[in-house]
Image 1 (cartoon, one colour):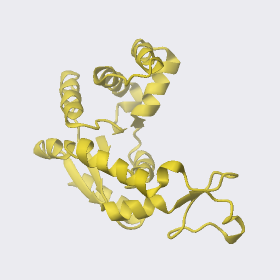
Image 2: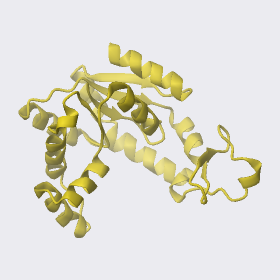
Image 3: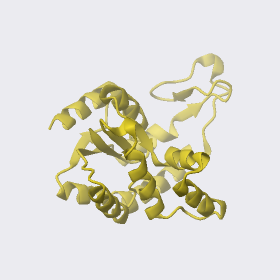
Length: 209
């Protein structure tokens, strides 16, 4: 199954992606990881991307899309893949669609995990991490044990201001890809509120449809 995973920051995409790749036996393709791997491997596109990154510039869409097409042609993607982190804008979605069509690749579904902004802010601002073990807790949903409560910390990008800014960027830049895929009949909306198990069950139902 060939899937693109979409949703706002804090919607639980990471949790659900980890479950889906095990269930479906397909690789999880994060564009950030893919870029780093291509640079490390010294591929033609990786070297091209590295030149932009070294200058502090964004890697152009055509280079990223070229890497994606190259990656999904790998043997481990023969049964499908889950693409995460791209496209982030409507023009990227259109360009990726064109490149996939040229490569003879068709998508099966675009999974959109939906969670209200107010709950996302609550989820993100309540997160705390243990600097000694790296364990992640939540003040409301998964409080740290009393003996380590004094040492857990909040990440700088987990503040309410940072969260609201990320959500604003998502709604202005990424949300417009939703109607693009909806028009193609690929979009599968999934309610991301509730336990991870409940959301996983809804995703399984959505992929059957």
